[in-house]
Length: 266
Length: 337
Image (cartoon, rainbow over all chains, first blue to last red):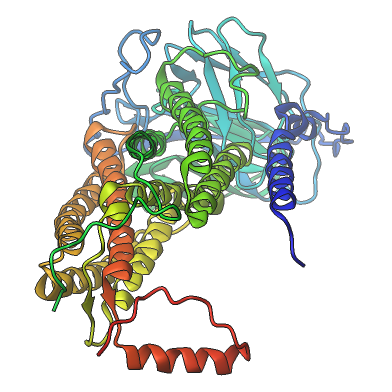
């Protein structure tokens, strides 16, 4: 087909406009979030006899020399004030903080009610508080910006939908939910590349995040055989099998070293 | 042997191209701006700021300038330079269309415009889809392709290219020098794709490093062949020497980038200046290397001919293959054996 110059120019212009229109039909963040924000249908919780429940508690320890926390340079943004150090490995008197402990296996097909309480993630001093957060699938996470600068919150999940939203200073909190179980889901801020934290989304309420005391407690466990797992962002995962008898309180400690899990958690 | 001292074309002929200094300077300026844009883009990736502005084509919901701090400085700064380059490219396309007598130059200018539009769309798509490695790499490849086109336009609008009769030489060696230059461009493109996929977390570093060996061998071969046998033709000698120097610098920068990012940067809590500058420099010099290879390929096409009998054989083969009585005009000029 022979085309004259005018036809060629017209076709090129149409193609260019088509490309621009295609690009302009940008996926709005609200559309991405709709799926996340759709509230989970309230699950009928499997009944648990409160007269038989037990618990597992313990301490997550770190042995050996603790790496010195790296100092963070926040000069990229003058609104980020104060000192900041990395929270990769936080140890206090041999106790490891920011370890996520949960029941990995043993609950069978039980279902649990999604709590109506919100968990809070705050951005203050250009760092996330807390550094490790845990909540249930479908539970609302309220994200606040207490800083005088804009942050953007960008989870990079493998199992859940990815999203990326900015939050101006004093903006209304964002409310998000995550539909699928996912452990150590990284969250970062693309405006302040040192800001990182981890979310843990589980289908049941038996989880904890250790603080500087290294302690955790999993309460209300029905009797049974469980696999208790502890996960750390840098040191990896380790598991222990624990049997909980009716009304029994079991102790299970975990130990990490510089190379990761130390064999023999107790 | 090259023929005698370069003669000036009869550029006063009605049908011939005319040197337009303003047009050439503007084309050179567009190429320079594009190089700055490549640096700005590399800064975005190295500072992990690709999603600092989460929407496109707006920035935080509007076209107003946002507060340029943190990752926004890099991401929005990159968009601003890109927008400027886009406007300059429109100007270049219009100016070329008005002043150029060579029809292929008008098409090339339109091609440049189409390329930068495609580049803008790719940039938007990669932001909206959270930086998928394939789209981010395509953005890098198209960006450097546009840079090569801009450099080529600057070359084609230059006084030497328009007004001087090209000095020619015959290439009787195998592989042909034109083949070597084409291989050089091809292996650099492969290196660009592998490097892009590594930078955007779609692939490990090993393929990029292994292909660097092929890059070093082929580019050295091409440059040494050119300098050894065609050193009297300045249009060939100069880009060949630049190619060698840039190759050495690029290999050194690649090593530094590897050390700062892969070896020392494994546990870095934020992008460190040494890593940022070595990786950005590696990207920038890579762009210069690719553009130089393209310039050398163009100049070899212009100045180095294959013997007449071989050209005739190639034409016969082409006629048989296409079944057409008309063969497209050859890119190489014939020289009597």
